[in-house]
Every structure is written in structure tokens, then in C-alpha cells.
Image 1 (cartoon, one colour):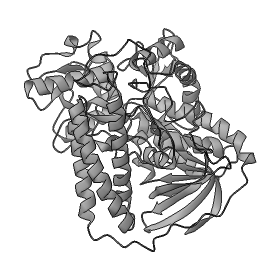
Image 2: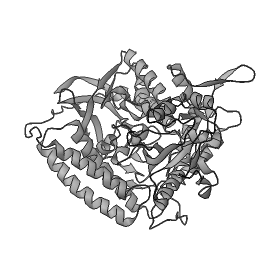
Image 3: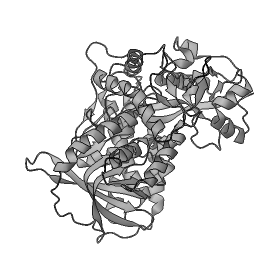
Image 4: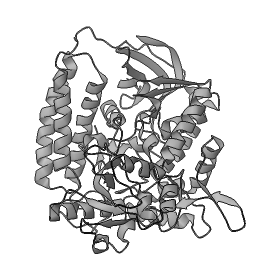
Length: 533
């Protein structure tokens, strides 16, 4: 079924990156279609607790933010991209405030109201702008409200991209994007949606792991779509595990914000003794990769289920003011964080690699852009520093907007595109295959390609991936597509790309730690891992 309208821009994803770009374009008269795989609030932005890093404090500086980011990235950040991103921090916050986001403020001694700034791991200063402990929710709801009000924005919930549509350029070596085949999962129909520009803003791929802080939507769709279309990917071995996810049998992937440690929370063992000082002089404020590995080490060494994060030494008023969401959530499970430590374990959290882009978010395919967690811009290197992610979303959405506005007037040529062909497939009568394959994939990725890796574990994972790819491919060829099947198909591709990247890196660096090569190789200039289709 062909959607009769040819959109100026088709944005795939409704998180901070996708909606901020859609709004910037719409305000310039551009007609934008925004696809959301589920409800508009189901992206990772909505669940982000911490905040957005930006230099506001008089004692802080752009140079310090740059230095901290480069240090966390373990030698693989692109310094030009880091500087570009950090210098746009304040203007990004200003833009959000203009679009209705209310950030937490405090009053100075002179009575002036200023933004309250948190401090998080890896940061040498307080520079985290936030809305209590639910920043992502505040950002997401404000952007959704503005998008719904704008006549140039068309919102499509429960629409999942099946495949990108490209055409070969006259040089026979490059491609141009022309649209996408999109599953309307409520009507169970595949639409043909054409656009002059397509932007991938689909988020990360942490759901490839058994335990994740991410919502169900984080299945690496944009990475897999771009890879199948012919784009390079980079640095997918660097999957960030957040050190502190609530450990409780009835809690589903609830993150305990980095800000808890930033405000004095201490990591302790079941007997109450601290341990982070044994791993890094920055203790609880060390970068996430160090803290996650330290917790993983203690859990495995001692045979315990979890460690604990204790903020109870702070006053009840302080905790309720700074962490109301976390307090309410933990209380539901019988944990009063004003009096008790929080049981925590590491959990897959952020995809530092992704689709290769330039400083304007352009990919290898003409008129195809990637913004946010789906992209590998060069900002994060081998490890993302806390709260640089939402900043990246906002900065590169603005950069993409600038380039798209320049490019749009010249795009006029549209060739005929065939509709999606379902004539050779039938409805599935074995949905259990999808759920079993999904579970198997996420289990062995957690066991073999997690926080600590070995060559043997990676080889075992790849063997299983090859079997699953064949089985999923046969299933995809014979049955009508469903949202679950599309996600599984994408996840197994992303799993393969993660393992292939990890197999190429013969050292430990940042988030990639292998027992076979436990040291960082400083004998040569560190290189990004790049895979070409």
C-alpha cells in the first residue's frame, strides 16, 4: 500500500534526537513524518534519569568538559567532534527551555534562580542539567506536546520500518535513499512511505542482552537497517553496562541514576564494607566501565547476587528532593532508600558504536542521516561519559537540520517504487519460534559477550549467531512480518556486528575488556573498529 504523500523528511524514531530534529525542521516549513515503533513515549529518552551535560558553572570550562570526555573515551574520541558537541551544550539547554522543558533550579545567596547542576561519574565538575531524577521524561513529554501541536509534523505510532528503500546512483557505486517499507503493526499492513530525506533516530541495541536498563524498543533496528542498505558501522564492541540497575525479582530494568553516586552514594558489599577505592582513586565517581567491571568482579569473586548502593547517610529531605522517582520505585519493592541501601547489579545500557556518520550526521548513503544513539559520531570513543548522550542527540539533530535545509530544495527526482510483496508468504502458526530464538540470543550474548570477554566466548557466540541467522532468515522468507519478527531479525544482525567488532580488537580498551588481552595496547595510535557491508 503506497502512502500517497511524499514527505520532505521521514524521521524513524520519536526520542530526543528524532523529535528535536522534527521540530527544528517543521519550524522552517519542512513537512516531516515521524515514525514511532510503539507509543511515542517508549523510546530510551523518556526513561533517562540523569540529565544533560553542559558547562554553566563559573568554576567549570569547555576545556574541562572536553578533557573529561576524552579521558572517558580511552583514546578513541574524535577531538573535533568532542569540541563541536561540548561547545553547543548551553545553546542546546536554552533551546529545550524555549520548548517548554522545566529544569530543576536553585536559589543563590543573592536570591537569583539558576540551574541546579549535578555531578556524575567521569565529570570533574558539576555540569549535569536535570529535572529532578526524571530528565528524559520531562524532555520527552515537552517535545511530544510541541510536535503534536505543529501542523508540519505527522506522527505515526506503532509503525516499524521493515526495510529502507534505496536506488543506485549513476556512478553505480553509491546509493540514494528514497523511503522505507513500514509495518503498521495495528493494521498488520506494510506501507510504502517515500521521502526526500530519511533520518534514523532509532536508539541503541541493549536489548540484545538478557539484562538491560533500556525499554523494549532498543533492538538495534536502525543499525541493522543501515547495514543491510550498505552503510558502514563502527565500534560496536563498546557496549556500555550501567553499573547500577535495581536488583529485585519483580523489578524490570529499573536504572538507579549515576547522580546517586554523584551526590555521595557509596557502593558497598553485603557486609557494609566499601570496595571502589580498591579499583580506582576516584572511587564511586570513576567512569562507568571501571565501576561496572569492579561490581562484576566482586559479584563473581564472592559468589553474591548483587552489591549495594547506599545514600541513606544523606537526610531524608535531601533524598526526596533529589531522587523522588527512585525513592517511589524502590518503595514499591519494600526498599526505603532513606534508611536502606539499594541492591544493584550492572546492566546493558548504552550502545557507544553504531552507524558511521560525519559532523552533519550524514551516512554513507545519500540523503540518509543518523542521529542519537544509533550513530557513531566519534563523541564517545571507547566509553560514553555520563549525560553526554542527550547532549549528542540535541547537537547532531541541530547539525542534521542545517544540512537538510540546504539540501532539500535540490531533491526532485523520484522514480517508481514497487509496493511490498506479500504474495508468497502466509501467516505464522509458530510464533513460539520467535520468542525462543529471542531468549536464546539474549542469554548467550549476556554469557559470552558481556562485561568480561574471551576469544573462546566470542567464538561460541558467533557459532550460535550463524545458526540463528539461518533459522530466522527462513522464517522471515516464509511468513508475514510482525513487529516481534522484525526486531528479532535486526537483533541477530546487531549481535553479529558486536561480536565481529569485538573479535577484531586484540586489546582491552574502555568498555571492551578481554581476559586474553587484558592490557591496553599503547604501542600504536588507537584505531576505531570499522565494518563495511
